[in-house]
Figure (cartoon, rainbow, N blue to C red):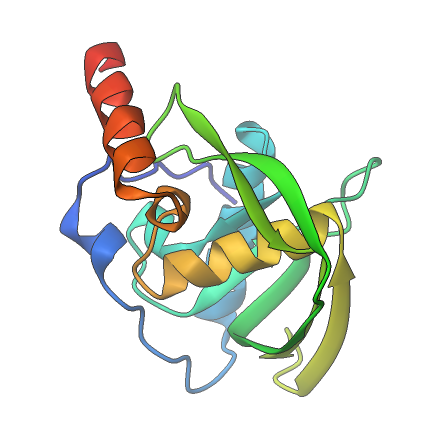
Length: 164
C-alpha cells in the first residue's frame, strides 16, 4: 500500500473520461488500497483513480468520522438523485489551495461493482453523496469547478495560478 502523487491540474488526464473496469482483480484491489492510503494522507473523503493517473473507473469514498470504512467502487453510476440540494465547500488535491461552494443533490443512489466483483447498489447521503458525485465527475473528466459559472471558475483558476 502506497500514497501516490496526485496529478497537477491542468494534466490532460484530468479532462479525460476513464475506462470501464472489466473485472475485479488483485491488481484492481491493490489500486484501491493505494487510493485509500492517498485519500487518508490528504486527508479527504474520496478519491477517483484518474486523480493519481490511473485511467480506470475506480473510486473510493469514506465520509465516516472514525475512518476505515471506505467504500470501493468500480464503474459507479448514479441511478437517482434527490431533488433537495446541499451546498458544500469542495476542493481537490489536483489543484491545491483553492475551493468553491458547490450545490449538489443531498442524496444519490449509486450502482457499482464492489470488491467481490458483484453489482451493488447503495444510497449515499450528505458528505458521502457530495463526494460520490465529485468522484464520478473525475471519472468523466470533470473537475468540481466545472460546475461553477465561467466567471467564478476563471477567478478560482487565476487564484490557484497565483498560489502555484
